[in-house]
Length: 221
Image (cartoon, rainbow, N blue to C red; front, top):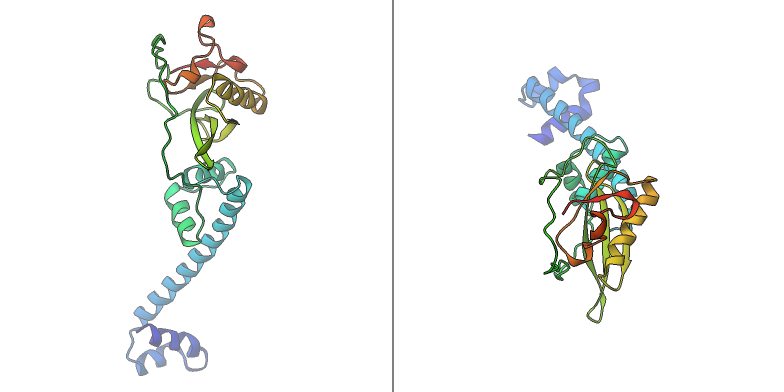
């Protein structure tokens, strides 16, 4: 049936849609419905291609490490109205993939002697404004021969954007502190913001000053 519709589309100017539909025994309403669907499909293909170009730009900017969630957050921050499902579909369609770590390495090592810290965010990781709530974690990066580098990140809960990071061959406190200092430089100040982390020993920062971390940010385990 599609071949008949295409034939009508290709030859309707000299012969007319009505005559060709009659000869080919095709309902005109079906032909027009096919034509509308084809036009919508072409528009969708063009829109997907345009979105793929923007995704590739973000993907390249972050050295191919960003996947669907981070790319969606970056596009939204740039004003693009798009959801993560469409971003994921277009990434699969055009063969764009973020970095995937295959082997799990333990990075959260609780401090046995640590005093419990209240969860100031109460598991609410949303935010109505930037520079108010942050989350962070440590990720391992395999570099070969069984060796690892460790990446500490600081992510704004409002935009889901990575605003600070630090990388080292150890998981000592300085790794996290450097990531927070990096975020403070990017944002100008973190004063009054809340930083949520896991219970790793690396986050046992400045307990004597009520968890006042680099840049004036408040720890909220």
